[in-house]
Image (tube, rainbow over all chains, first blue to last red; front, side):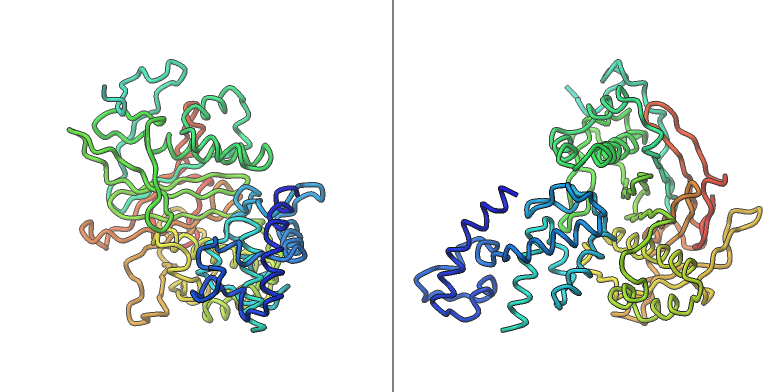
Length: 134
Length: 312
Protein backbone atom coordinates (compact mmCIF):
# COMPACT_ATOMS: atom_id res chain seq x y z
CA UNK A 1 0.00 0.00 0.00
CA UNK A 2 3.05 2.24 0.23
CA UNK A 3 2.73 3.76 -3.21
CA UNK A 4 -0.94 4.63 -2.95
CA UNK A 5 -0.36 6.12 0.51
CA UNK A 6 2.34 8.17 -1.13
CA UNK A 7 -0.10 9.48 -3.68
CA UNK A 8 -2.68 10.45 -1.07
CA UNK A 9 -0.11 12.23 1.07
CA UNK A 10 0.97 14.26 -1.91
CA UNK A 11 -2.52 15.16 -2.94
CA UNK A 12 -4.50 15.77 0.22
CA UNK A 13 -2.94 19.16 1.00
CA UNK A 14 -4.18 20.34 -2.40
CA UNK A 15 -7.69 19.11 -1.96
CA UNK A 16 -7.77 20.49 1.58
CA UNK A 17 -6.70 23.91 0.41
CA UNK A 18 -9.29 23.90 -2.35
CA UNK A 19 -11.96 23.15 0.19
CA UNK A 20 -10.72 25.93 2.45
CA UNK A 21 -10.95 28.40 -0.39
CA UNK A 22 -14.49 27.24 -1.03
CA UNK A 23 -13.86 27.15 -4.74
CA UNK A 24 -16.97 25.59 -6.15
CA UNK A 25 -16.83 22.61 -8.44
CA UNK A 26 -13.11 22.21 -7.98
CA UNK A 27 -13.24 18.53 -8.59
CA UNK A 28 -14.43 19.28 -12.09
CA UNK A 29 -11.24 21.05 -12.82
CA UNK A 30 -10.48 18.58 -15.61
CA UNK A 31 -13.29 19.93 -17.71
CA UNK A 32 -13.66 23.52 -16.53
CA UNK A 33 -10.85 25.99 -16.74
CA UNK A 34 -10.31 28.83 -14.25
CA UNK A 35 -7.49 30.80 -15.88
CA UNK A 36 -7.94 33.69 -13.50
CA UNK A 37 -7.13 31.65 -10.43
CA UNK A 38 -3.65 31.81 -8.98
CA UNK A 39 -3.43 28.04 -8.97
CA UNK A 40 -3.51 26.75 -12.50
CA UNK A 41 -5.50 23.54 -12.32
CA UNK A 42 -5.29 23.05 -16.04
CA UNK A 43 -1.59 22.50 -15.87
CA UNK A 44 -1.87 19.69 -13.39
CA UNK A 45 -2.32 16.09 -14.32
CA UNK A 46 -5.95 15.02 -14.31
CA UNK A 47 -5.45 12.56 -11.51
CA UNK A 48 -3.84 15.08 -9.21
CA UNK A 49 -6.79 17.38 -9.33
CA UNK A 50 -9.32 14.66 -8.55
CA UNK A 51 -7.73 12.58 -5.85
CA UNK A 52 -9.99 9.83 -4.68
CA UNK A 53 -10.55 9.66 -0.97
CA UNK A 54 -8.87 6.71 0.71
CA UNK A 55 -12.30 5.26 1.59
CA UNK A 56 -13.30 5.36 -2.06
CA UNK A 57 -10.11 3.62 -3.09
CA UNK A 58 -10.64 1.00 -0.43
CA UNK A 59 -14.19 0.32 -1.58
CA UNK A 60 -13.00 -0.03 -5.16
CA UNK A 61 -10.28 -2.45 -4.08
CA UNK A 62 -12.93 -4.47 -2.28
CA UNK A 63 -15.21 -4.64 -5.31
CA UNK A 64 -12.32 -5.62 -7.55
CA UNK A 65 -11.18 -8.30 -5.11
CA UNK A 66 -14.64 -9.74 -4.95
CA UNK A 67 -15.21 -9.74 -8.71
CA UNK A 68 -11.88 -11.37 -9.44
CA UNK A 69 -12.13 -13.70 -6.45
CA UNK A 70 -8.69 -12.67 -5.28
CA UNK A 71 -7.42 -14.10 -2.00
CA UNK A 72 -7.69 -11.79 1.02
CA UNK A 73 -3.97 -11.42 1.32
CA UNK A 74 -3.37 -10.51 -2.32
CA UNK A 75 -2.17 -6.97 -2.65
CA UNK A 76 -4.59 -4.70 -4.47
CA UNK A 77 -3.86 -1.02 -4.43
CA UNK A 78 -4.30 2.08 -6.55
CA UNK A 79 -1.55 1.14 -8.92
CA UNK A 80 -2.91 -2.33 -9.62
CA UNK A 81 -3.79 -2.74 -13.26
CA UNK A 82 -6.99 -4.61 -13.97
CA UNK A 83 -5.37 -6.57 -16.75
CA UNK A 84 -2.47 -7.59 -14.53
CA UNK A 85 -4.92 -8.86 -11.93
CA UNK A 86 -6.45 -11.10 -14.56
CA UNK A 87 -9.61 -9.13 -15.29
CA UNK A 88 -11.05 -9.83 -18.70
CA UNK A 89 -13.60 -7.62 -20.39
CA UNK A 90 -16.57 -9.29 -18.74
CA UNK A 91 -14.91 -8.82 -15.33
CA UNK A 92 -14.24 -5.17 -16.11
CA UNK A 93 -17.81 -4.53 -17.12
CA UNK A 94 -19.05 -6.32 -13.99
CA UNK A 95 -16.70 -4.26 -11.86
CA UNK A 96 -18.01 -1.07 -13.44
CA UNK A 97 -21.55 -2.22 -12.77
CA UNK A 98 -20.64 -2.99 -9.16
CA UNK A 99 -19.12 0.47 -8.79
CA UNK A 100 -22.20 2.11 -10.28
CA UNK A 101 -24.38 0.34 -7.75
CA UNK A 102 -22.11 1.00 -4.80
CA UNK A 103 -21.70 4.71 -5.49
CA UNK A 104 -25.00 5.48 -7.19
CA UNK A 105 -23.37 6.76 -10.36
CA UNK A 106 -23.54 6.04 -14.05
CA UNK A 107 -20.36 5.39 -16.01
CA UNK A 108 -20.32 6.12 -19.73
CA UNK A 109 -18.58 3.68 -22.06
CA UNK A 110 -16.21 6.51 -22.97
CA UNK A 111 -14.88 6.86 -19.46
CA UNK A 112 -14.93 3.15 -18.70
CA UNK A 113 -12.67 2.45 -21.62
CA UNK A 114 -9.86 4.47 -20.12
CA UNK A 115 -9.83 2.83 -16.74
CA UNK A 116 -6.62 0.84 -16.54
CA UNK A 117 -5.81 0.88 -12.84
CA UNK A 118 -7.77 0.75 -9.63
CA UNK A 119 -6.78 4.36 -9.01
CA UNK A 120 -8.27 5.38 -12.37
CA UNK A 121 -11.55 3.80 -11.31
CA UNK A 122 -11.51 5.48 -7.90
CA UNK A 123 -10.71 8.88 -9.40
CA UNK A 124 -13.48 8.55 -11.95
CA UNK A 125 -15.94 7.60 -9.23
CA UNK A 126 -14.92 10.60 -7.16
CA UNK A 127 -15.46 12.85 -10.15
CA UNK A 128 -18.86 11.38 -10.95
CA UNK A 129 -19.98 11.54 -7.33
CA UNK A 130 -18.95 15.18 -7.20
CA UNK A 131 -20.78 15.94 -10.43
CA UNK A 132 -23.85 14.28 -9.08
CA UNK A 133 -23.92 16.32 -5.90
CA UNK A 134 -22.89 19.57 -7.56
CA UNK B 1 21.07 -8.48 -43.72
CA UNK B 2 17.46 -9.37 -44.13
CA UNK B 3 16.65 -10.26 -40.58
CA UNK B 4 12.98 -10.70 -41.15
CA UNK B 5 13.21 -13.76 -43.29
CA UNK B 6 15.27 -16.58 -41.97
CA UNK B 7 15.31 -19.79 -43.85
CA UNK B 8 15.94 -22.25 -41.09
CA UNK B 9 18.71 -20.86 -39.03
CA UNK B 10 17.10 -18.43 -36.62
CA UNK B 11 17.39 -20.84 -33.78
CA UNK B 12 18.71 -24.33 -33.78
CA UNK B 13 16.47 -25.11 -30.81
CA UNK B 14 13.23 -24.57 -32.71
CA UNK B 15 11.91 -27.01 -35.22
CA UNK B 16 10.46 -25.00 -38.06
CA UNK B 17 6.75 -24.26 -37.93
CA UNK B 18 4.81 -26.20 -40.49
CA UNK B 19 4.19 -23.63 -43.22
CA UNK B 20 0.67 -22.95 -44.40
CA UNK B 21 -1.14 -21.16 -47.12
CA UNK B 22 -2.98 -18.06 -46.07
CA UNK B 23 -6.69 -18.52 -45.58
CA UNK B 24 -8.68 -17.80 -48.72
CA UNK B 25 -11.12 -14.88 -48.76
CA UNK B 26 -14.13 -15.58 -46.54
CA UNK B 27 -12.20 -18.25 -44.72
CA UNK B 28 -11.21 -18.13 -41.09
CA UNK B 29 -8.40 -20.01 -39.47
CA UNK B 30 -8.69 -20.49 -35.77
CA UNK B 31 -5.79 -21.65 -33.62
CA UNK B 32 -6.08 -22.44 -29.97
CA UNK B 33 -3.84 -23.50 -27.09
CA UNK B 34 -4.93 -25.19 -23.90
CA UNK B 35 -2.52 -23.81 -21.28
CA UNK B 36 -2.97 -26.83 -19.04
CA UNK B 37 -1.39 -28.96 -21.73
CA UNK B 38 1.75 -26.85 -21.80
CA UNK B 39 3.80 -27.68 -18.74
CA UNK B 40 7.33 -28.11 -20.01
CA UNK B 41 9.36 -25.26 -18.58
CA UNK B 42 12.01 -25.57 -21.26
CA UNK B 43 9.29 -25.07 -23.86
CA UNK B 44 7.91 -22.09 -21.98
CA UNK B 45 11.39 -20.61 -21.92
CA UNK B 46 11.64 -21.09 -25.65
CA UNK B 47 8.36 -19.25 -26.07
CA UNK B 48 9.68 -16.50 -23.88
CA UNK B 49 12.56 -16.03 -26.28
CA UNK B 50 10.13 -15.24 -29.06
CA UNK B 51 8.76 -12.20 -27.27
CA UNK B 52 9.94 -8.65 -27.58
CA UNK B 53 11.50 -7.13 -24.44
CA UNK B 54 8.35 -5.05 -24.04
CA UNK B 55 6.14 -8.12 -24.18
CA UNK B 56 8.34 -9.96 -21.70
CA UNK B 57 8.01 -7.06 -19.34
CA UNK B 58 4.23 -7.08 -19.68
CA UNK B 59 4.23 -10.78 -18.92
CA UNK B 60 6.32 -10.24 -15.80
CA UNK B 61 3.87 -7.65 -14.53
CA UNK B 62 1.03 -10.13 -14.47
CA UNK B 63 0.13 -11.25 -10.96
CA UNK B 64 0.93 -14.84 -10.27
CA UNK B 65 2.29 -17.73 -12.27
CA UNK B 66 -0.94 -18.69 -13.97
CA UNK B 67 -1.53 -15.22 -15.36
CA UNK B 68 2.11 -14.93 -16.40
CA UNK B 69 1.91 -18.22 -18.24
CA UNK B 70 -1.32 -17.20 -19.92
CA UNK B 71 0.13 -13.90 -21.07
CA UNK B 72 3.24 -15.65 -22.36
CA UNK B 73 1.28 -18.25 -24.28
CA UNK B 74 -0.95 -15.59 -25.79
CA UNK B 75 2.01 -13.74 -27.27
CA UNK B 76 3.68 -16.96 -28.35
CA UNK B 77 0.47 -18.07 -30.05
CA UNK B 78 0.07 -14.83 -31.96
CA UNK B 79 3.68 -14.75 -33.10
CA UNK B 80 3.91 -18.38 -34.13
CA UNK B 81 0.51 -18.33 -35.81
CA UNK B 82 1.31 -15.37 -38.03
CA UNK B 83 4.77 -16.70 -38.78
CA UNK B 84 3.32 -19.89 -40.19
CA UNK B 85 1.76 -18.31 -43.18
CA UNK B 86 3.90 -18.59 -46.23
CA UNK B 87 4.45 -15.33 -47.88
CA UNK B 88 7.73 -14.77 -49.62
CA UNK B 89 9.66 -16.82 -47.17
CA UNK B 90 9.59 -18.42 -43.78
CA UNK B 91 9.01 -15.79 -41.19
CA UNK B 92 10.74 -15.58 -37.87
CA UNK B 93 8.15 -15.31 -35.11
CA UNK B 94 10.62 -13.42 -33.01
CA UNK B 95 11.12 -10.65 -35.50
CA UNK B 96 7.46 -9.81 -35.99
CA UNK B 97 6.52 -6.40 -34.78
CA UNK B 98 3.17 -5.34 -33.47
CA UNK B 99 1.47 -2.07 -32.89
CA UNK B 100 -1.96 -0.90 -31.94
CA UNK B 101 -4.27 0.94 -34.27
CA UNK B 102 -5.72 4.29 -33.33
CA UNK B 103 -8.25 2.62 -31.06
CA UNK B 104 -5.98 0.10 -29.41
CA UNK B 105 -6.58 -2.94 -31.61
CA UNK B 106 -3.36 -4.88 -32.07
CA UNK B 107 -2.07 -5.40 -35.58
CA UNK B 108 1.12 -6.53 -37.28
CA UNK B 109 3.54 -3.81 -38.22
CA UNK B 110 5.00 -5.03 -41.46
CA UNK B 111 8.27 -3.48 -42.31
CA UNK B 112 8.41 -1.72 -45.59
CA UNK B 113 11.28 -3.27 -47.44
CA UNK B 114 12.09 -4.06 -51.03
CA UNK B 115 10.63 -7.23 -52.47
CA UNK B 116 8.33 -7.67 -49.56
CA UNK B 117 4.60 -7.45 -50.02
CA UNK B 118 2.93 -7.58 -46.66
CA UNK B 119 0.32 -10.30 -46.61
CA UNK B 120 -3.22 -8.95 -46.23
CA UNK B 121 -3.50 -10.83 -42.97
CA UNK B 122 -5.78 -9.89 -40.09
CA UNK B 123 -5.83 -11.48 -36.68
CA UNK B 124 -7.50 -11.21 -33.31
CA UNK B 125 -6.98 -13.05 -30.05
CA UNK B 126 -9.01 -13.90 -27.00
CA UNK B 127 -8.25 -15.85 -23.88
CA UNK B 128 -9.72 -17.41 -20.79
CA UNK B 129 -7.87 -19.17 -18.04
CA UNK B 130 -8.25 -22.45 -19.89
CA UNK B 131 -7.82 -21.50 -23.55
CA UNK B 132 -6.10 -18.98 -25.75
CA UNK B 133 -7.36 -18.53 -29.28
CA UNK B 134 -6.18 -16.65 -32.33
CA UNK B 135 -8.30 -16.11 -35.43
CA UNK B 136 -6.81 -15.26 -38.81
CA UNK B 137 -8.39 -13.93 -41.99
CA UNK B 138 -7.22 -12.27 -45.16
CA UNK B 139 -8.46 -8.99 -46.59
CA UNK B 140 -11.10 -8.40 -43.95
CA UNK B 141 -10.95 -7.60 -40.25
CA UNK B 142 -11.82 -10.28 -37.74
CA UNK B 143 -12.86 -10.27 -34.10
CA UNK B 144 -13.05 -13.31 -31.85
CA UNK B 145 -14.09 -13.89 -28.31
CA UNK B 146 -14.05 -17.05 -26.24
CA UNK B 147 -15.62 -17.68 -22.88
CA UNK B 148 -15.82 -20.70 -20.64
CA UNK B 149 -19.18 -22.37 -20.92
CA UNK B 150 -19.34 -22.52 -17.14
CA UNK B 151 -18.63 -18.84 -16.65
CA UNK B 152 -20.84 -17.27 -14.01
CA UNK B 153 -21.54 -13.62 -13.57
CA UNK B 154 -21.48 -11.98 -10.15
CA UNK B 155 -24.38 -9.80 -11.14
CA UNK B 156 -27.89 -10.94 -11.91
CA UNK B 157 -28.04 -11.73 -15.62
CA UNK B 158 -31.16 -9.73 -16.41
CA UNK B 159 -29.90 -6.74 -14.42
CA UNK B 160 -26.65 -6.96 -16.35
CA UNK B 161 -28.46 -7.26 -19.67
CA UNK B 162 -30.72 -4.34 -18.85
CA UNK B 163 -27.69 -2.23 -18.15
CA UNK B 164 -25.62 -3.23 -21.16
CA UNK B 165 -27.60 -5.09 -23.81
CA UNK B 166 -30.20 -3.92 -26.30
CA UNK B 167 -33.93 -4.10 -25.45
CA UNK B 168 -34.52 -6.96 -27.85
CA UNK B 169 -31.73 -9.00 -26.32
CA UNK B 170 -33.09 -8.35 -22.84
CA UNK B 171 -36.47 -9.59 -24.04
CA UNK B 172 -34.96 -12.77 -25.45
CA UNK B 173 -33.05 -13.52 -22.26
CA UNK B 174 -35.96 -12.70 -19.99
CA UNK B 175 -38.13 -15.13 -21.91
CA UNK B 176 -35.87 -18.03 -20.94
CA UNK B 177 -37.25 -19.60 -17.80
CA UNK B 178 -34.53 -22.13 -17.03
CA UNK B 179 -31.77 -20.19 -15.23
CA UNK B 180 -29.02 -22.44 -16.51
CA UNK B 181 -30.14 -22.10 -20.12
CA UNK B 182 -30.51 -18.38 -19.57
CA UNK B 183 -26.96 -18.18 -18.27
CA UNK B 184 -25.65 -20.12 -21.26
CA UNK B 185 -27.50 -17.96 -23.76
CA UNK B 186 -26.21 -14.87 -21.97
CA UNK B 187 -22.62 -16.05 -22.33
CA UNK B 188 -23.16 -16.83 -26.01
CA UNK B 189 -24.62 -13.39 -26.56
CA UNK B 190 -21.75 -11.80 -24.69
CA UNK B 191 -19.12 -13.51 -26.84
CA UNK B 192 -20.93 -12.53 -30.03
CA UNK B 193 -21.19 -8.91 -28.98
CA UNK B 194 -17.54 -8.83 -27.95
CA UNK B 195 -16.43 -10.42 -31.21
CA UNK B 196 -18.36 -7.83 -33.21
CA UNK B 197 -16.87 -4.90 -31.33
CA UNK B 198 -13.39 -6.37 -31.61
CA UNK B 199 -13.87 -6.96 -35.32
CA UNK B 200 -14.82 -3.33 -35.82
CA UNK B 201 -11.61 -2.40 -34.06
CA UNK B 202 -12.78 1.02 -32.99
CA UNK B 203 -12.87 0.46 -29.28
CA UNK B 204 -15.81 -0.27 -27.04
CA UNK B 205 -16.91 3.30 -26.66
CA UNK B 206 -17.39 3.64 -30.42
CA UNK B 207 -19.95 0.85 -30.47
CA UNK B 208 -21.55 0.59 -27.05
CA UNK B 209 -23.21 -2.77 -26.54
CA UNK B 210 -26.62 -1.18 -26.26
CA UNK B 211 -26.41 0.27 -29.76
CA UNK B 212 -26.55 -3.01 -31.60
CA UNK B 213 -28.54 -6.21 -31.43
CA UNK B 214 -27.41 -9.74 -32.15
CA UNK B 215 -30.23 -11.70 -33.56
CA UNK B 216 -30.53 -15.31 -34.52
CA UNK B 217 -32.53 -15.34 -37.69
CA UNK B 218 -34.96 -17.89 -36.41
CA UNK B 219 -36.46 -15.83 -33.65
CA UNK B 220 -35.59 -17.95 -30.67
CA UNK B 221 -32.05 -18.56 -29.57
CA UNK B 222 -31.33 -22.21 -29.18
CA UNK B 223 -28.50 -24.65 -29.44
CA UNK B 224 -28.26 -26.08 -32.87
CA UNK B 225 -26.05 -29.06 -33.29
CA UNK B 226 -25.93 -29.93 -36.94
CA UNK B 227 -26.25 -33.61 -37.73
CA UNK B 228 -23.90 -35.15 -40.28
CA UNK B 229 -23.10 -32.14 -42.36
CA UNK B 230 -21.30 -29.33 -40.69
CA UNK B 231 -23.18 -26.57 -42.43
CA UNK B 232 -25.72 -25.06 -40.09
CA UNK B 233 -28.48 -23.86 -42.30
CA UNK B 234 -31.12 -22.77 -39.90
CA UNK B 235 -29.71 -20.15 -37.64
CA UNK B 236 -27.91 -17.29 -39.21
CA UNK B 237 -26.59 -14.66 -36.87
CA UNK B 238 -27.34 -11.09 -37.78
CA UNK B 239 -26.08 -7.85 -36.33
CA UNK B 240 -28.50 -4.95 -36.33
CA UNK B 241 -27.41 -1.47 -35.53
CA UNK B 242 -29.88 0.55 -33.47
CA UNK B 243 -28.40 3.73 -34.84
CA UNK B 244 -29.52 2.80 -38.30
CA UNK B 245 -32.19 0.11 -38.24
CA UNK B 246 -32.62 0.29 -42.00
CA UNK B 247 -29.10 -0.97 -42.49
CA UNK B 248 -28.84 -4.23 -40.62
CA UNK B 249 -25.04 -4.07 -40.48
CA UNK B 250 -25.05 -6.73 -43.13
CA UNK B 251 -21.40 -6.18 -43.66
CA UNK B 252 -20.55 -8.50 -40.83
CA UNK B 253 -20.84 -12.23 -40.51
CA UNK B 254 -20.94 -13.92 -37.15
CA UNK B 255 -20.57 -17.51 -36.15
CA UNK B 256 -20.90 -19.16 -32.78
CA UNK B 257 -19.00 -22.30 -31.87
CA UNK B 258 -18.52 -24.66 -29.03
CA UNK B 259 -14.78 -25.35 -28.79
CA UNK B 260 -13.10 -28.27 -27.05
CA UNK B 261 -16.35 -29.00 -25.24
CA UNK B 262 -15.52 -26.30 -22.72
CA UNK B 263 -15.82 -22.93 -24.39
CA UNK B 264 -18.14 -20.84 -26.47
CA UNK B 265 -16.34 -19.03 -29.24
CA UNK B 266 -17.67 -16.24 -31.39
CA UNK B 267 -16.14 -15.14 -34.65
CA UNK B 268 -17.11 -11.99 -36.46
CA UNK B 269 -15.67 -10.96 -39.78
CA UNK B 270 -16.42 -8.41 -42.43
CA UNK B 271 -17.93 -9.75 -45.60
CA UNK B 272 -15.61 -9.71 -48.53
CA UNK B 273 -17.60 -8.12 -51.35
CA UNK B 274 -15.16 -9.32 -53.95
CA UNK B 275 -15.26 -12.90 -52.83
CA UNK B 276 -18.99 -12.98 -53.18
CA UNK B 277 -21.63 -13.23 -50.55
CA UNK B 278 -23.18 -16.51 -51.50
CA UNK B 279 -20.41 -18.88 -50.66
CA UNK B 280 -20.67 -19.87 -47.02
CA UNK B 281 -17.59 -18.83 -45.12
CA UNK B 282 -15.23 -21.63 -44.27
CA UNK B 283 -13.61 -22.39 -40.98
CA UNK B 284 -10.55 -24.45 -40.18
CA UNK B 285 -9.54 -24.99 -36.59
CA UNK B 286 -6.29 -26.25 -35.12
CA UNK B 287 -5.38 -27.13 -31.59
CA UNK B 288 -1.72 -26.32 -31.22
CA UNK B 289 1.29 -26.50 -28.99
CA UNK B 290 3.62 -24.39 -31.12
CA UNK B 291 6.74 -26.23 -32.25
CA UNK B 292 5.41 -29.43 -30.73
CA UNK B 293 2.11 -30.41 -32.25
CA UNK B 294 -0.66 -29.03 -34.45
CA UNK B 295 -3.88 -30.96 -34.69
CA UNK B 296 -6.56 -30.00 -37.16
CA UNK B 297 -9.80 -30.41 -35.22
CA UNK B 298 -12.31 -29.06 -37.73
CA UNK B 299 -15.23 -31.38 -38.22
CA UNK B 300 -14.53 -33.23 -34.98
CA UNK B 301 -16.34 -32.96 -31.70
CA UNK B 302 -13.87 -30.32 -30.68
CA UNK B 303 -15.62 -27.80 -32.90
CA UNK B 304 -19.40 -27.61 -33.00
CA UNK B 305 -21.15 -24.87 -34.94
CA UNK B 306 -23.95 -23.49 -32.79
CA UNK B 307 -25.03 -20.66 -35.03
CA UNK B 308 -24.16 -18.74 -38.12
CA UNK B 309 -23.73 -20.08 -41.59
CA UNK B 310 -20.26 -21.48 -41.70
CA UNK B 311 -18.72 -24.58 -43.16
CA UNK B 312 -15.92 -26.67 -41.73
